[in-house]
Image (tube, rainbow, N blue to C red; front, side):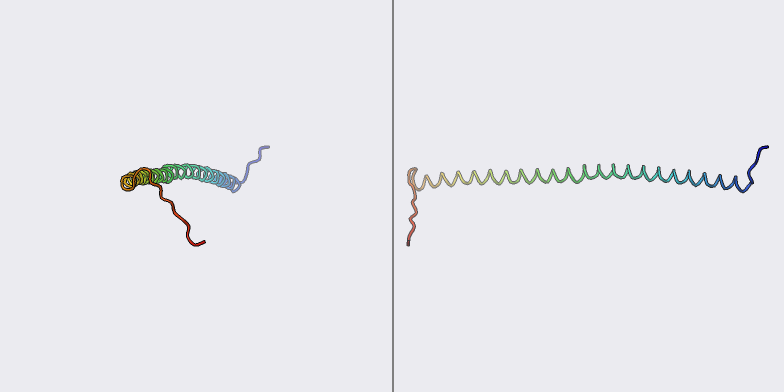
Length: 99
């Protein structure tokens, strides 16, 4: 004897199955959104922030290098001027007074 389920039981099983399918689809959608969101954030951080920071660091480095080169050149010019004004072999000796 084949037993058939009551009409209300079939509707309940169909609803339960639909709920599980909807739940599974939501879990999959949330998982994919999370993966793509993290990937997108990684790309933004890498391309925008890190590259921008490296470019600023490089600009600062070359700016400091230019300043250092100018200071060295100025130092050489001052040394040449001193040698011209005071002679090549003049040594200045500072004495400590008072003790």
